[in-house]
Image: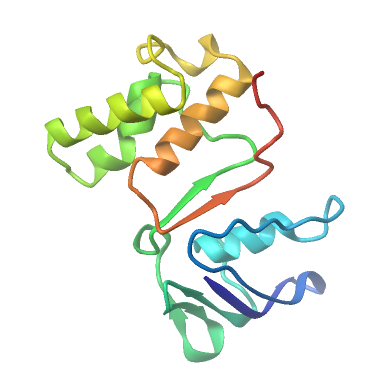
Length: 169
């Protein structure tokens, strides 16, 4: 992934000011800074949830965002998984329904969905909780449900906003 000269303005306020970086395959990268410095806005621009004012974003070598070139690939076509700071798990869906939602939306075969759920429930230590609703889970468990949903589609890039905020021991 490559971010080049990224700028995001909201009216006269500049939330992201000329940010550039590259993240290579199998590499971890962290954006660090004080509250309000543009970390979440940068992630939202990379994911396609926010359109930058200026700059280019490449994912797996493909240009996905460039206001200057009128390129804006929609979020669902970027190959990105994202875990939001507030998790964004749906309260009316069970653990399994939340985690399998992207696969069901993509109309994947039921057997593939079931295999993926068994794998993710084990990986994230959520076995036995698949029929529970978010209100019946701890904050850390809810965060793992959101992570499972993001991982379910085998994304090229994972974006985690405040990923250490609710880890369970």
